[in-house]
Structures are given as C-alpha cells and as structure tokens.
Length: 101
Image (cartoon, rainbow, N blue to C red):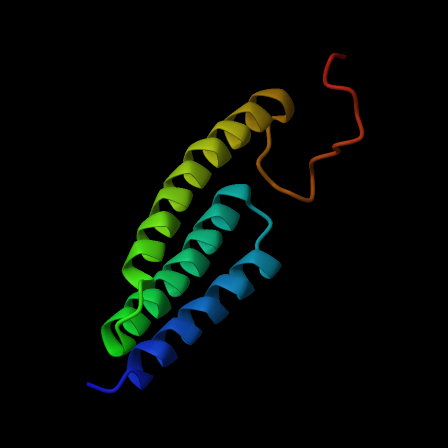
C-alpha cells in the first residue's frame, strides 16, 4: 500500500483540526480540535513507521500519552473556569480580572 493515502487523510484531519481551533469559541470544542490535530500527527508517525521502518510507533505512543494528559488538565481548567465565570466561551472570559473578588 502506498503511504500517500494515509498522508492525505492526516492532512485532511489536520486541516479540520486547525479550522476547529481557529473558528470555535467553546473551550470543549477547542480541546476536541486539538485532539484531531494530535490524531493526525499519530497517523503520520505510524504510517512513516510502517513505510520506512522508523521509530514512529514509539513517538505515537508518546503523543497518545501527551493527549491523555492534555485532556485531563484541560478539562480540569475548563471546569474551574465554568465554576468561576459560568461560561466556557473563550471570547466571554476576561482573564485580566482578579479571581479573588
């Protein structure tokens, strides 16, 4: 199998992820778009590993661990943001206001 097809699929996934990061205003949807970006990178790494015999699978495992940590920390931050501001819309959050009010 030619590695062109998975590379094109990864490019499409990456493009959708970039669009999601730039166009979405909801923090949960931003996290989902970042996950799409990371999955596109994983697809490229595994395809390169299968096609060329490199160590892409090891790097893909590290990216999966990074994605799991990002989701855990990101959801904790979003939950705390919702508790303090009653919104998860990125545009509505004023980060210059003191949180001890």
